[in-house]
Length: 263
Image (cartoon, rainbow, N blue to C red; front, side, top):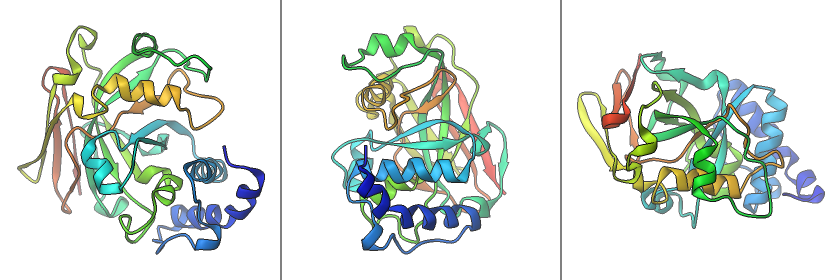
């Protein structure tokens, strides 16, 4: 966690991000004087941003669980970002083009927790986090940034900005997933009538449950993960920017489909 000194230094960064969320303006970047320098400082900014906006949260996104994403963002490992409840949508919804101007798309497996995963000294096993899961859902993360050039800034700046989460579109719960090989499960994304991304569950840290285990063992807050929260585990389809008006779908095979349209 960030120190009190770091919290004071980065306080103006919180104000800038609050303004960007509230009015839809884009930042060039956070000024160096108040810029978070480490992931600990970035999580501190993120937490105070969420607290100041006072928007109910639904759970977490995990970023950079795939090699492709880590190369794009020049990251050595995963990070976490809050997901706001009003920005979680059911499959089949229409979303205005201007709501998330980047229109970034990532097909992901998402878990809803049935039990708390509180911070502890002993690392959680995959079996333990699997036992804490209530449901698995196919999902599409809509990536959006409060920066004009999200690839021209530092990783802590991205993490401070909720990890560039815009929204989450969630499909119905999957059946029989506990008996299936999620790592080998194929995922295909289409946008504007074309295939724009393909991958498999194993692209997320080798297995979607491994991504969830990483978050349980590296919680960004003292509360850890709570029952009822949704955790989306990172892209299995790479990253694609949709065009205005695109209809978007993601096929997870036996685990279902999720779709929406930009309008």
